[in-house]
Image 1 (spheres, one colour):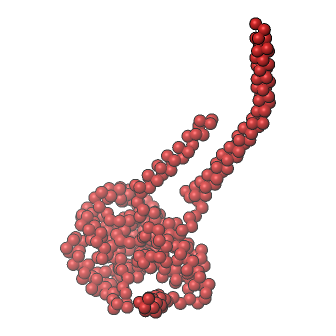
Image 2: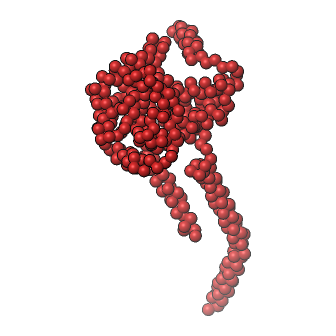
Amino acid sequence: MRLKMLCLPALLLMLQAGATEDLLQFESAEQQQLYRQLTAELRCPKCQNQNIADSNAVVAVDMRNKTLELVRQGQNHDQVIDYMKQRYGDFVHYQPPFQLSTVWLWLLPLLAVLTLGFTVFRRSKASQTTAVDDRAEPEDLSDVAAQLQAMIDEASAKARHKPEE
Amino acid sequence: MRKALFYVPLAAFLALSLFLLSGLFSDPRDHGSALIEKPLPAFSLPDLQQPARLVTAADLKGEVTLLNVWGLWCPTCNAELGFLTELRQQGVRIVGLYYVQPVDASFGDTFDINQLRLDVQDKLTEQGDPYLMNIVDEKRSLIFDLGVTGAPETFLIDRNGVIRHHHVGDINPQNWPKIQQLYQQLQQGGSDAP
């Protein structure tokens, strides 16, 4: 317990040390927000699936610095993204562009939902027709009952005649 | 009709399996280059041999050139030097773009181009010198404009200074024939363009 008590202030000190490292200066809160958004959206071209905020690869650090520079110049979100795409291609942005080669990203889920919807619709229709069949059954049953009754009548008639023989 | 519908999930499963299977054979580093068919970005960077002389994009025009991004710190680049030297002996024009890694000033590191020249000279006398010249990109500005993600990477540039191919990774006897084909096409047919 005492050890834990000692650890806590040490941990707090560590947090503070981490916070003073890499202190970036922004003119406004909007620019800071934009920088955070951009570094989260831009993908490190060297790493497998890390954004540039998350990576310390040289190219990711260079891209962060360039993003900071462009944001400080007052460029907006799309301008910075375009700047990066001109150099590192569409790969660099986590939001893929809508074009012929990427159209399946939108079409495929849509097709899947439509196919599923169609299947479910057909199935529910099919079960409705079975329900109609079920309702038809009592008529058939009364038919069977009539036949049974006839058989019983016949048998009992025979039984009535038997003792006389 | 109902029978055919029965096979739809199977077909979908097979299609998905084939798609995922093809992923096993694809190279995750290969995600295309944004600069194909675009002119070499403008730059003005020092020549390693004579730092006072600034090399520009115009200096690379006139002949089909391989622009090879490399650095002493990069083991694959060093391994590639031997084969590139062979290519130079066959008459391929190779220009080096030296990738300077960031120096951390807070550790007292500084960049010294004269020291770099000596180190590079040592390395190239030892391993072979494939380079017509070396462009030093201290701030990685041209490297950034070219969309370079690391080293080694090589650009095939035609006579008019237009980038025709971007190769990520080393050039070796296995993958050279493909690049060579492009190189020879450009050498034969590239002169009629303006």
